[in-house]
Length: 106
Length: 118
Image (cartoon, rainbow over all chains, first blue to last red; front, side, top):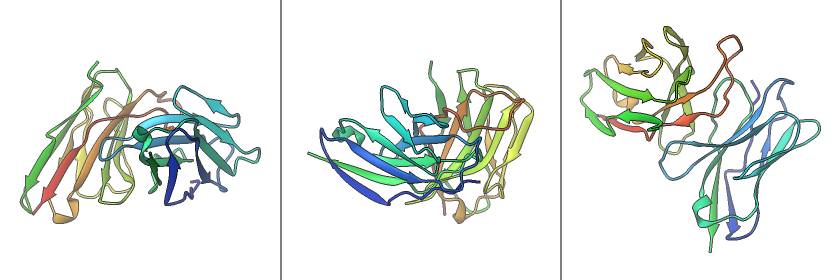
C-alpha cells in the first residue's frame, strides 16, 4: 500500500492559490491519487482524483508528477471556507492519514 | 436525495453495553464503509461492504460487527462497549464494480455519530 506524506499544517492568504503537496513515492502503477477534505468535524468531502494526467474540476486542480511519486492539490483562489484538513490518499485500501491542516486567513 | 444519513448523532454508553449505529444511503451505491476518527487523528476503516450480503474487515474491526441485508442500510454493532471505542464514527457510500478490486473512488460521507463510552 502506498504510504503518503503531507505537511502537518499550512497557511494561505484569502484569494491566493493554496498548493498542498503530497509525497507517495511507493505508489504502484494502478493506484489512483485521491484528495478529500474535512471541514471542522463534518464528514470528509471528496475533492478530486487522478491516475497519471493532471485533473481539474470546479473545486481544485490536481498535478501529478511524471514519475507519480508526488502530487499537488491546487485551490486556485482560496477562501475562508476552504479552511479544513486535506487528505491525500494513494492506495486502494481506503486508508486516510492525518492530512494537512490548511488555515486560510483574511 | 438525502445522501448518507446516520443515527443517532450523539450517544453515551456505559462500559459493557451494546448498541447499533445506523447508516442508510439513498443513492443506490454498492459500496459502503464504516470509519472511526479519534481526536486529532485521521480516519481508520472498521468494516466495509461491496454489496448486499458481502462484508469485509478493515484496519480496526475488533469489537464491531456489521451486516448488509439491503443495498441501502449498513448498521454497525458494538458488541460490548469499551472506553477505547469513544470516537466519532462515519459511514460512507460510493459507486463501484464488485468485479474489480475495491477502489476508493468518490465516497459520500454521513455527518457522523459521536460516541462516548464511560
